Figure 1 (cartoon, rainbow, N blue to C red):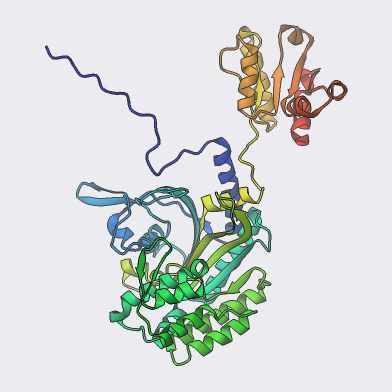
Figure 2 (figure 1 turned 90 degrees about the vertical axis):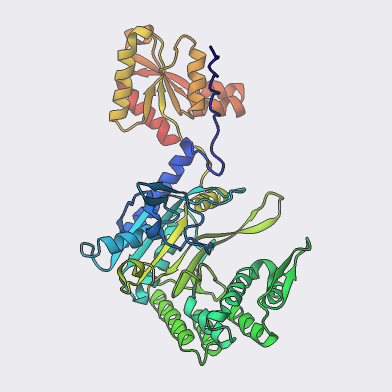
Length: 491
């Protein structure tokens, strides 16, 4: 009889492009999302949760930076229907707005938070699953909706701990760029490829400078490695129009608008876009949002094949250092804009919409870089077990602490080695350990060990200081909650 081949054990490893999130990371993210939700709620937006899976047909061809429909998604067939994990939060919103259009208020204002999935090549800091936090208004063509989104984004960044002066919300308009393209002779379907190259060239202005951008607008550019990137093939006069657009930002909003008006003079679509920017700027100024928080900036070129009007981006301006120690700015943490054509896919009717998406992981990284977060979370109070047959007493203590709103747990491992219980408390980042043996129980007292103070004393204090500040003391059992709360308040 043939020997049955033993199945190999599965490898305990995370799939490529995915990661696990542990205690403090999850706590920090949840706290930040709660702060964001409070701002969105204050602005009158309602929460919405959609399924993680949509039909491929509903997702459509709007995956950012991908030309082919449905490329880059995790898809599978179910009973003849192709389904896919959502790649962003906007496509599900478009489906909801169309499916429930007779039940939802119009305009419909919603915010949503959760993971999205993209089937693309992972890299350093680039994962196939990540969190997004969106807010959108569906059903309003008013520029007041766009101004409100920008104001809300500014308030959100400050609410989570990015101070004024360390960020800027920048606004541009797809229509203005369309007008510039028209003036430069790049209108029409036959110029679509050239327009795409122009957009990518503008997007690389910060990295390559004007000279590098002009090379991409012209015949092409060879980088330091010798790789050649084909250019848009524009004549110098055409390139001058594009460069003039990217250089149109002036000291204040009205001056920038005036310069843009000059650049798109003669283009109806461009003029319309400038008027929209002017309206947004006036609405923001009326609410007290000045150029220290929100500015008009023609260099913003994000998702312009997707957006139909205003586009906006939140950039963090403080300096950090990369892995090689070189100084650089942190960069973008959020972006959005007006996408009036997305819901129309389902209804055949024009449904204006505008919204913002915050990159949750990038914003968390920014808060770490600013020192607002330290990657640690305070653990529970640990009630140690000195006598196995007195577990009910220990559970009673823990219940008393929890009823007082104090996070606590009983040690449930093998209590034989007391040192292991304290090691467990250290791993849990526990601030306090509660100790009660049979002698303390008979006298109605407990030992309270301040683990944080104990660690500080052990690291820094002299012997005399250690004696004057004992990290462990005996208190009556009836004072347990008050004594623990005093320690937690101090920490």
